[in-house]
Structure formats: C-alpha cells, structure tokens
Length: 202
Image 1 (cartoon, rainbow, N blue to C red):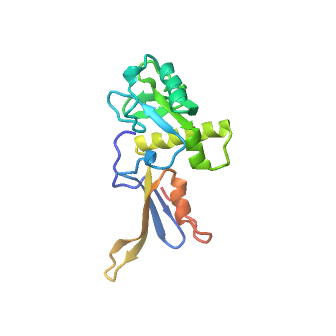
Image 2 (cartoon, rainbow, N blue to C red):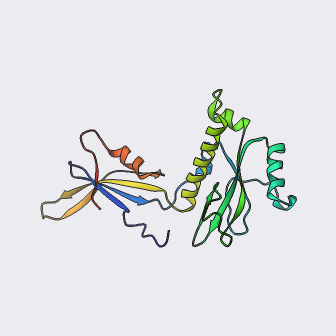
Image 3 (cartoon, helix red, strand yellow):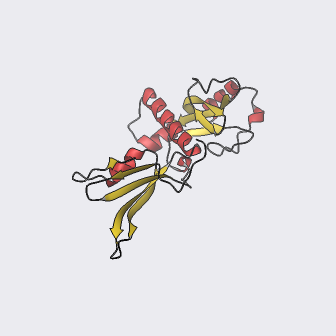
C-alpha cells in the first residue's frame, strides 16, 4: 500500500444538512480470525504469524503440502479445503487463487490451507447446511477479509458538523464515529438517510 498518512481522511463526503463524513484507515483493527468463521486457517511462514493458532500441527511432520492436506481431511475432519498462497513483495497478501501475482515464481508460494469441518458448519449454519459451492464462496470471502486486515484495508468514519463561533472561527463538532468496516459503502450506509444522502466531495 505504500506510505499512508493515518491522520488524513482517504475519502470525504457531505450531505445537504452540512454534515461531513470523513473516512480513515483504522490504525488498530481487530483480527477477523477472532470472529466466528466457517474457515480455519493453517499457515506456516518463517517471518509472519498468519491464520489460526495450531500448536499440535508442525510443518516438519509433513514432507509436502499434499501430506498436510490429507492430514487435515483425515485427522481434523476437513470437508472443504482450499490452498492458500502468499505474495510477499513490499507487504504481504494471501489468496486461494493461483493467478498472478500469486503464481509469481519469485515472490509467491503456498503458505497453507483454509478448511471447514462439519462441526464448524453446524456452528455457523445450524441445520441449514450450505452447498459445497456456497462453502467455497464463504471460505474465499473470509480469506479476502483476512487479506484486507493484513494490508490495513479496514476503515473507520467520523461524522462531523462544522460549527462557526461568534468570532467567525470554525471548529469541527464530532457527532459520531465508528470503526471496524471492511467496505467504505458500509460506513456510508451507517450514516445515510433517505433525506440526506452523502455525496463524495474529493
């Protein structure tokens, strides 16, 4: 992402009431792996601590990624399992895709797996078991969210009102603020009303 000024908004919006909505990168986002998830991420990397804790799984016990995949299916009950690849160049990103840049022979490699189990599915979906295609979609979405977390692509907003004092000076009165958003549109939906929709000004 390069150098980011965390004190400057990345997008600014206004509405007809004169309120200003400023969107920032969140400096200390919560790890989405602490949420309830379908997927369990098992990763091994020399420099980065990625995914879920897995103290009973040691990479040295496996001679290949396929051996680990078979272990996760047999011993951990994985019913849907996807490979995870890392792209490590001026920051890191992970994906289940093998497409470029995750196919780059210099800066990418497999780093682990994301999988789900019958127990996880029951915990998340109750008696309404999703199809395999839907479970793959859920796991991919969880990896995308986790990738945003790794890259700092998490947002918070401030809703402010510009207030003028008697001497003609202006100051910002913070009406509301909230963080933990992975999509800017969700910041907007928190603040938009039918009568006062925000419009981008920058």
